[in-house]
Image (cartoon, rainbow, N blue to C red; front, side, top):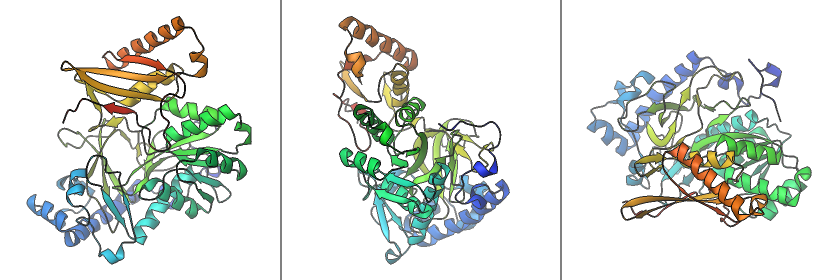
Length: 445
């Protein structure tokens, strides 16, 4: 495993795809952002009636926005706006200039459809190429893309980034684990790209089959769902790789909005393409760096579907201190949860990542399920936790003791009581895409 170095990393050991951009001065980055923001505001006002109406209602003219300092004057955009404008209401170019769409799952309402011109795709691919090179990727690598393809952005983004770098690209998509492992071994995959839950599943399968010595993996680029540091270390240990985080969302472009470098002290936001803010999710007030709040992104280079001040609902912290990797882009922490889909149980905010931390610290796998019900007007929190084979071989007394220990530690972490059920290995359904961690049966809406 690569050891982290103190201080700046020697130039010959740094991995950059576009060093003149990734290591640009803060003054240059600000100049790019000022110019591109002004251009984008004029672009959407002139070409998107939905934006024009919102800005007019708020008394804002394009000329009011002269630099990033004026960004706060613009109203926020939310997923509800995107649903109202479905399908073409936010398209900012003639339809004949758009060459692709991607879409969210639409599980909570109308689908969100994002459009791309060829320039948009090229920009997105460059962002993903930066992430691959930051993870040590070169043209000599074999990039194994197990994110879903099709409407989902994961596969397309890392596939395009891999092509930009010049890697041999395996467009595996999700599922067919048997075939995944066969190609991984036969073709010598060196960089794995997938969701962290699927990486954990692959790692588990590799250990069961005792084929770790047949793998040539050196790195993994994992995103599309929340995961903890404990889960990262578990995957790294089992697959003998260094695991890198990547962040993105369909509304902004897809994976590659930000990415981790070898230092793994936050994800660098591609600030030449996106302006990032942290706000108080309740008041909308912009918060200073270092304070926890909701991530807000503004696209400043996209042509077909540029979003201004889009509320992601992800809870995060920003850090503008220079990274020892040499990159000058602001870093965002791993999202700590969501402002909209976090669980509120008995009046307490509960994030699945908190529960996962306790479980992994106690030697359990990342396979668990949270079930919330309401009995006699009182919330009930049940957590099914899958045991390892070694744990399952223990006595009933040992299992009861382990169960009580998890209950106590969860009470200390969450501040509320949770019923813990230790279940048999393999009894929780595995996911080859995003893991289904939470089942809320309360019918609160």
